[in-house]
Length: 556
Image (cartoon, rainbow, N blue to C red; front, side):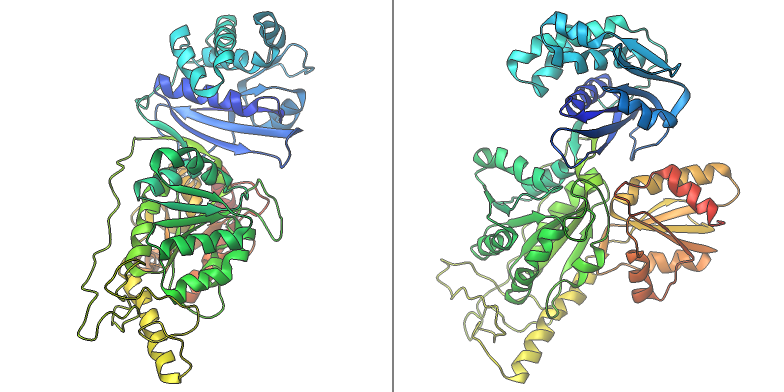
């Protein structure tokens, strides 16, 4: 397994170079995981990506580097301490550095000679691929660049990549696997593909990083799929549009980040009291307020569990990795429709923007909810009392009844009420769904030992780093380590946690927030108090190495 960093200023072609490398590596059979670190600016600053690749499927990033492609001098100064002693720095001959690991190449002049100085990134990509023993030929290079660039730029970039490949010598043995038939997707793309497989018909959102690419992806597919992808004037409009579409019978979703979700909260309650199915995506970033728009955090957990005035049932699902994002999004639509309630998907910038190789997915996994007999002796009643909490539902245009919905408290027929008895009966009916939802929840994934002495707990995108951390700690052999990583997070599944915590010397929660929100939730639901916490809230994702090091510092 190798780790390669590509860094430079915004506008220098970092992302294009990364995309080219990913496609060549996947084509050769490598499994890939790429994390991105982006500044909130269009030009300048420092952006970089860490590409981890090899014969296996990496699940997270790693800090220790085998190579650096430095598109400017600043990249060397920032990252050279993470480079292995035997690693390399590939940079243009104009860059000033005294690092003995530097390989100077006249990339800009090579690209200029070929006809486009901006093809220097392709020269660098070709050279780096040769270093790692990855083949590059004209035919395959053309296919790669046709997928990444405008037609008029393909030829010069093919020649640039071939020139870079020829100018470099292979230095290490290639680490390739069997991933050439996989697809490369970001977390947001995996989520969106899941929504498409679930039969989404309407998506509305206001652009807010790091959720914006969901809207962009669906907009690009809208005509082909016959769906509506609407850019609303704000997040309040976006969620109300989605609720209206769902009321009319469409499978609907809205997406945002924490700040936009704050604006959506009152309408979330409308979905709850009117019992209208809805999927809401919160791609988290650091707050409060504007916070860090292009960074990552896991600080919205307790907020989304309780967001609203009043109480109503909801399900909260945290997306753990790319395949999980695909499958859980399908499941979210099914549960929202079955229970006529909002389902919130929690992601974050790390997962949203990271790309990886996953198998081609089955697009036919979505299920339609079972329709019961909507008519009774007394006719149709939209909010008919039921022990399950699930009432019959028709959509406008069905002549068997009146399709009612109300944000005021109401009776079985959707008529506004104020009497205490009806209020209590209707509230009990809705909250019965919460008990039913508990039958749907899935226990957390177990990583590592079956009977650990030290049990780590995490949620969402901590899956990959925790998998790496547990592997590293178990290699030491002094103790047995495991991690439970929660996907379903409200209602909180706790059977497996309680069983494993009984036999463990310590339970440590690992999260990307300041207050240890999962640890707090676990104590609230189960009474289990964590022994220590590994927390990070600087906008950068914990790595497996960092987790292992900090657990050791805690004495475990």
